Amino acid sequence: LTLTDLDFTYNRNAEDSGVTLMMNVEGVRTWREPAPITVEQLAALGFDVSKSPGDKDAWRFYRRQRPRPAFLAIGLQGEPARLRVIDALGDAAALRARYPDRGKVAVVPAAVALIFDPPARQGPNAGLPPRIAGRVTQFPAAVNVPKPYSDGFRALAETKRAEGSDVPLYRITLTYGRSLEPWVSKVDFPAQPVSR
Image (cartoon, rainbow, N blue to C red; front, top):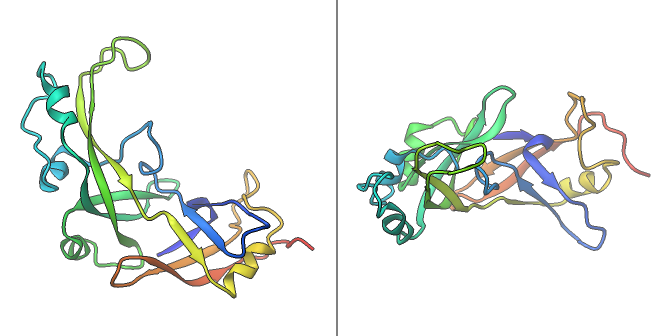
């Protein structure tokens, strides 16, 4: 899976001997918007979704359900292409069978929680019906960059792409092994000025 600086957050730390990037996956690292995990996927993960969100006891019913282990398919989608959650299942092999192209989709372990959104009485969501959705509560977002690639990150003049620029600061190819943890197999720094 080849990603660019738009798919990561890099916070440089002069005291840190290593370089760690944090993956930016839409719907994962935000509390404002749940991941695109459907009610059907929640049921397949073992959540009891039998009670209508409009039921008067729905909040009590759904708040008792604990997060569950899951596997997420993540990949570049949309326009502009961004790293997004594509699918969720309880079985990594079944998810990989659905998305066999390892160059476009990664399968990663995660934890998913069921959230209940009661009807909003005021604000921009006033009048929307109650709903249940999935939220990713644990996700292996940290990617440790080994030497010699980490030296290139330390030499970057900037850690964020200039606004309006189409040239990535870096491209990283991630490979996922049997343990489904990412390792950096290639880094490219397209013609960028480096700090001196």
